[in-house]
Amino acid sequence: MAETEKYGLLFAMLEPPGEMEEEFNDWYDTDHIPERKAIPGFITAQRFVAYEDSPKYLALYDLQNVGVLHSEAYIRVGPGYYSPWTQRINRHARIFKRYVYVQTSPGKSLISKEVNALLVWMNDIPEGKDEEFSQWYDKECISYLKELEGFIQARRFHCVDGEAKDLALIEFRDLEFLKNEVYRGVLLSDKAIKTRKYFQEAMNKIYKRYISSEASPQTDELIGNTFRYCYGSWLKAQGLRKIL
Image (cartoon, rainbow, N blue to C red; front, side, top):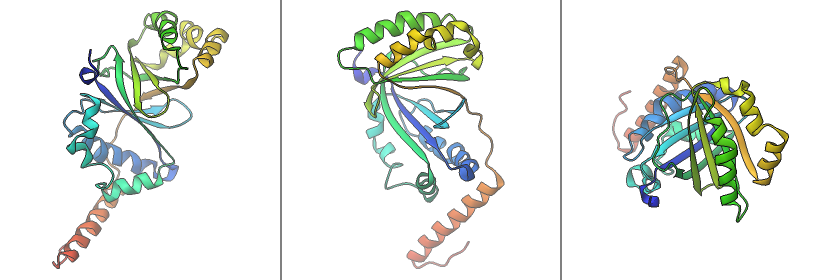
């Protein structure tokens, strides 16, 4: 399958300061996600929250291909076109990581609608060790994990813009797999940990599905005030009377 035929993935990890968390989630749910989903080529948009530790929030966007991120529609919502609310959120974010991937296996699979738990596994595989890693990943890891109750699918990606060059997203219906001895043997045994270090693991984190809620009254007020300020400034610049 040609690279242009494979699905792309936009992968973003963010963490707001505690005092802005409610506003951050309102912005993501009511502004950022709808804006991205409206762009041609964005197929899915799904958010997750860390099971523990940080970065606390993860957003995944399946793309028709990575070229979508160079389209006029995407550029028009990027830097230079950010709304005041988006600028405010970005300015205060404690952690922001953004990576772009091409799906290598199976190539054209979308995130499942049933996923409630996600294993995010990044490896910066040493030069010349890709085939060795793939053999270990397929035979010693996925072949066992896919037998666990609740397993949905495993997808692998190659990084085209970011840090660790290999990403695996392993989907489950719930977090029960964490209690399974098979999972612990595959990834948490002494042998597994040694092998993970050998392949230069960069991240191994569990995320659970984020459940959105409607915008809070405080954020509704903030949106209204931001709109009034920006619209009023525009009217003034045009020499018109402020009507709000």
